[in-house]
Length: 136
Figure: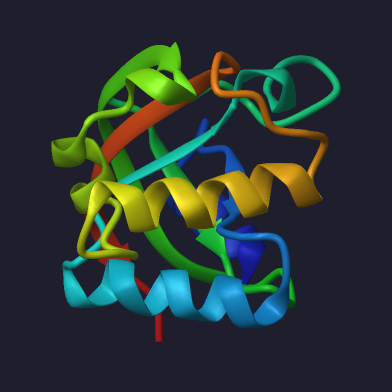
């Protein structure tokens, strides 16, 4: 399916990529497809008019492969804002990338340091989702 076809099928959907490079993006998409990843988070500073669209409960969005082709569609089921240090083990484990809160903290601290800076009190947008459709 092309991106234009996916957008026609899901009017109002935003598009986004998981991760900050092709390898991480592919790994995260695989975790979503397998059902291990049912949550994601991003720095609040990355959302808004010049960044990503803020997730909205009930909206379906198109996750892209790193090359810009549609990979799958998720529906947002919950959005919360909290500081990095307030993220709990239940949310961290729902991200599916680690088997402990400490592992999640280490990986996400490194990710945020690569992408604009990290602080334990920085605000993050925490999103839980379900998969609506997988392409190809």
